[in-house]
Image (cartoon, rainbow, N blue to C red):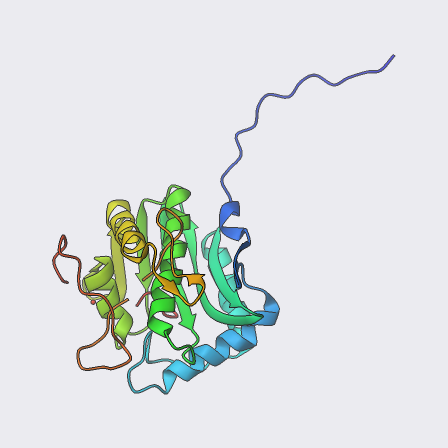
Length: 241
């Protein structure tokens, strides 16, 4: 006779952010979590921005190495109690962007972001990849979005305020937006980019997982879309902090 144990009552599992940890492949592009082997390349992108005349993200701070990038990831995991929110964009084996943050309750806080400045379109890559990450966090039910930066001397400040519609907290390098603002931004960018192509690669698809940024006037590299006509213009997406 086979003995069976009594049925266990249903268990309500706590959300761990697992859907943020998935890998997605589109054409030659792979979106996935950070690996330790990526860290040296991420650090190189970060340090390159430090010496730029017009930095995209935080222009202050000290240099990173691979170990510091990985340590920052561990800190984010601790702050989110395991709910790390990160995204590496890899193309043909090359890391071209990385964004990271953590979730607590229904709030998501981003505090690290880099893009490969050797790309022909680093700002557009930033826009697309942040929007993709925003879209994925929206699908998990996030209701408040924050970007914490170590400096406000960079292009991403205007991008956050004018393009995304985030508002700065008084006397702090933290920008905040609710779910409706982020969803509107992601949707508007997806619609604007629908059907646009670069070579054979679709830049973005509507209702997929879209893009983000804006540039200081007079900069040839920092050219981005104008502020949304439905929101007033207001100033990292992610800088280290």
